[in-house]
Image (tube, helix red, strand yellow):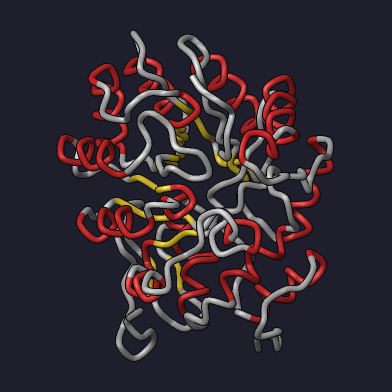
Length: 338
């Protein structure tokens, strides 16, 4: 029997476990979490400390904690898998970041073995080595890296990732600060060449929300993560268009929980509250908060029974199925937000 939950969503982090239990979920599947080598994390936090100058709006890091404290915070929240999602901003950086992420995966029981890539000689080889070594989630940030995702040097790596169906969390939207290669068109060009890629567009693609939703509708493997979307903070920078929310309902099986923990200027609970107040219903929330991310990150067994009786039994890029009886159809750059 599920617990009664607060319709408005959790008010504090302490309320979060009761919230997902009230939805009948085993926890949260957050695909957009960062753990970085300490020197890199310090530089990221230093950049956000200057956010008022960089973005025109202060960005106080809410979880400026040690690594053990950050891990324990996620465990207390009920996050069941923890990506690292490191990303390079210059050549030669990706291989050692991948080594660090491999070590993180080996020492953190809940870790999702992550890796990254950069357009450079040998990228296909080290991406293949990462996949063969167990990496099951990649991160790419075209704004920070200052490169286009359809750069020809990346072709061998995209081929590996397309064949392996390993998801890539891709920051390509132009918010909070446009970059030389941000926007949907370079991603569309990439997908024309590699249409079976499994991409998770970070931040719902803000602020090109509709354009990235178009890609999610057109390409089977394209998903959208909710990172920071709809929060009070981001509504000041890149508000969700009124006619966009119904599209999120229609794309329910392709929308995935993301938070950007720990680099957020508010409590984790507020992201869940922001999703709740979209008023898209409990089935949508269950899919977004758990089932879609669990499928993409490979949490649990390949076939899972949902709390409402529907089954999730396809691969990372596929849409999970539900019977009509059990589930209704859901009508170089600056170091910037990751």
